[in-house]
Image (cartoon, rainbow over all chains, first blue to last red; front, side, top):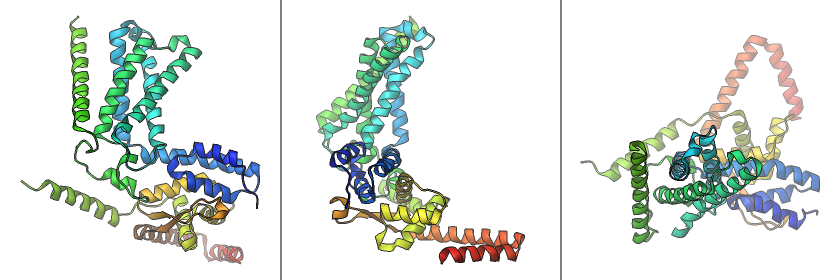
Length: 232
Length: 144
């Protein structure tokens, strides 16, 4: 019986989200007849599996809030560090590029997260991955078109603020993959079920207080800064 | 003041009952996938479902990815349920994800079948009995 090359299978396995990896690799293995057909099957199946997983793990209301907070963070950083760039023709577009990259990073991290209970500190890995994507997009844009490049200070301070705010938001609304559900749980129904606003018990009280203080402080600082800029 | 938990339970119950009494209508591809699961019974998993759907949809080609996406969507809607089987050697020691229709899915499929029959009868009424006979013969030949 012919089987696909083990190295190729391992490589394909890396592309498939962990929750579907075993099943999809098994199906592709069973259908193996020749290498070209195997590659055609991979090309047809893997992107659809990724898209389907993103659809299942993304809570679009929360994602919209995250996108808003990230854009707001970069905008606030630009107001403080390089106000002149906002007057530029593409000023607001330049701010949207790292924010969009960070949102894409958050979506991908959730899709590739292993479902089930995760330790509290793991909440930060999605936003951190998103921040990494934002920095990467900054480097790519800088290499491709210098006019669209964000000043490093705006990228660093905006990214840092965005990281804190998205972490705080994720403590209030944990990613769908972290919510309790069975192997074949109807995720859509669970997403519809009304949930009381409550911080997950797995966070130590000190972390909860620190997150709340950090979020409140940032919102306050942004409000004061906006007021000062308006008055000036 | 009404109990918060009671209100939440009532909200959940009304939502669940609402979903159960009014199942979503099925798209054509969803009908094909659910028919494949129904006919395959205990042997319904990715590869066999894809094979059966290709057979039902011929001459159109069907991609394996489209079947996965549809199975996920049907599971989210509560029409099908899935579980992992034991690993097998022919799959390189990996498990299969098997599917079966849920009661809600059976109802939705029944409604789709009734609608399809009404469409057939409506067309046959206008285009005549000869046309219906000819197509009946063609289907008979295909079924062998």
